[in-house]
Figure 1: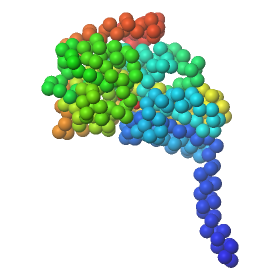
Figure 2: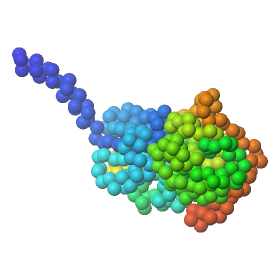
Figure 3: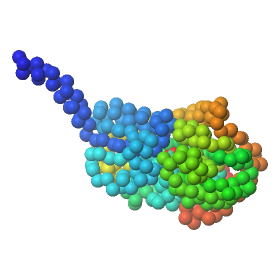
Figure 4: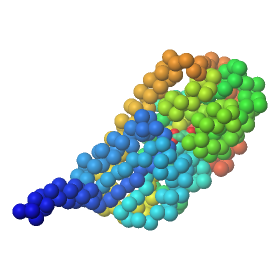
Length: 335
Ligand code: SIN
């Protein structure tokens, strides 16, 4: 009797652990932003959809806030990982592929996109495989693009960034690892400083840098607005993400699992666009209604002046990205 009771008591535990080990594959989904952002929410939804669709055979563990890997470090870890059952997936911003793809840098060209519908025109076009084509050779498999939104500039200072180049003079700006962003800041008259996302709030707060460029949801969820005086609605470039996995891990997955993951990603991508559109208005409003940074709209003339000042960046990177590809992108966007 004692033995039976003991066995009964252990049964739920045994069942629980059976459940815990029931998955055939684990995918660690690493990202650097907060969970309540377009990327964070899409990753959680994706994990739920894959779990349902594969009936638990694939478990996606989401690690937000640089908990697992900081910034582009995740791409190195992904490339080095050799497990067939535990893979790494991530959605680094397109700028963070600078070491792995010249063509993807096109996304960073200043004022390439007028708005998010231009972005979707490109991402949903047949040019996308050309833009991601070099990644396979680097051991990476591109799955989909997720939005955050158009970038705005924030600054700590006496006055907002409105004109060019005077307002940028003597100011230091945190940027991602993009060489195009570095050149763009220089053309505007400022000094760029590449820093991991995790360090931005402290760097702004301690005056290591004066300003930064980002999408509304990151400015809000990481509280950049609390340590900045002005936010200029420049919409000068796009912050989006490429969801990637290692080629080796992907190709080793059974076809039915790959299908389930792909369909779930498609659904998560659709939802991501909605989350991003919502965050763009909601997070901007929360900042505008708060007591910290003042939001400053830009006139058409001011926007044109910034565009003119940054135009030489295009010629500088044309050969590296590929002239023909840039021409095709321009044609697609009706330029
Ligand atoms: C991200 O949105 O993933 C980070 C962007 C940044 O590094 O500014």
